[in-house]
Structures are given as structure tokens and as C-alpha cells.
Length: 52
Image 1 (tube, rainbow, N blue to C red):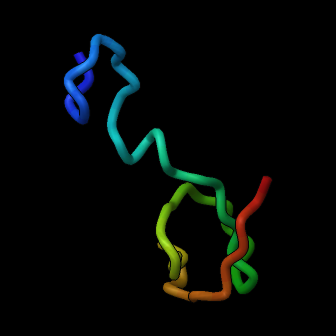
Image 2 (cartoon, rainbow, N blue to C red):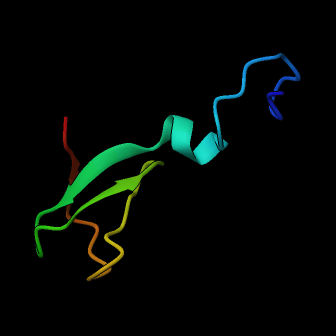
């Protein structure tokens, strides 16, 4: 059962549903994240862009 709305659909964790792929402009790491100012987990840079 979905923990967010109580419906019968299980989508997994809420982070997995809204997470998008981002790429770091400094170190080149591609990672999953969500939010407005996404920071790279490797080098802590905010020079990130969404990868499609």
C-alpha cells in the first residue's frame, strides 16, 4: 500500500519517484537527486545540470 496517499499502488520510496538524474560539471559524476540546488555527493559542487 502506498504510504503517501493510502491508495493500493506501491511505487516504492518517495525519493525514488521524484529523483532525477544530474551530472556534475566539475567532476563528471552522474547521480540521482531532487530539489532546487542539487550538490554533487563526490566533490560537493553546485555546478550540476539535469541529465535526460
